[in-house]
Structures are given as structure tokens and as C-alpha cells.
Length: 111
Image 1: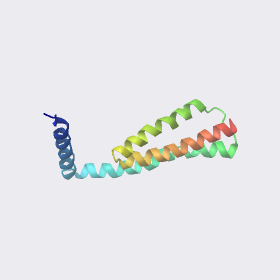
Image 2: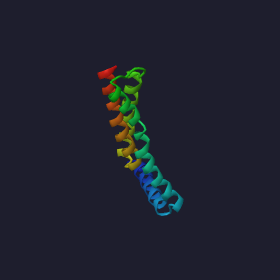
Image 3: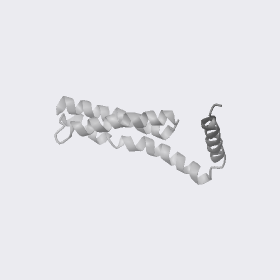
Image 4: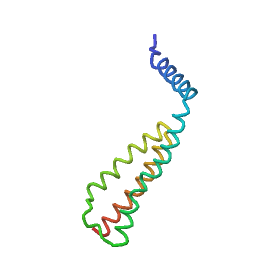
């Protein structure tokens, strides 16, 4: 006899997710919208770093290892966002990946 426990648990979990969405409070919906704004604004904090590197043509004091690490760790979070269809994560980590790559390029060019 096949074990259908996984299918049953998946159905219960899916039903729970649907009912949670239906019963979301207004506060949760507002917080979701705030998180979309945070997802866009947070990566933009790197813009002054990008401007500094490319306007002064120096990467003095920046660690290539650190910025490569930041860039590499954006990828699993981005994949996680796509798997779970989490728009704030997808937006945040696409932007973060983009800016981190620009900084890495600046460090390689001017470091």
C-alpha cells in the first residue's frame, strides 16, 4: 500500500496557506506593501558606494572578498524568492545582486 502521507500533508499545508491569505488582517497587508518599498530602497543604499568608486576611480579600503561574498549569497536568496514566489525577496535580491556586481567590477577595475 503506497504512503500518501506526503500528499495529504501537502494538501493540508496548501489549504492552510489559502485560508491564511483569506483571513489576512489589514495590518498584514499594509506591512506587505511596506516590505515591497523596503525591497526596493534597501539595495539602493549601495548607490553612494558605486558613485564613490567610479567617480574617484578608486576602490581603496574595499574588500573584494567581502563584496564577492555578498554577491554570492544574493543568489540563494534570489532562488528562494522565486521558489516561494515572494515578490519582496525577488526585487530586493535582483537589485542587490546588480549593485554588488557593479561594486565588484569597480574593485577589480580600480582596486
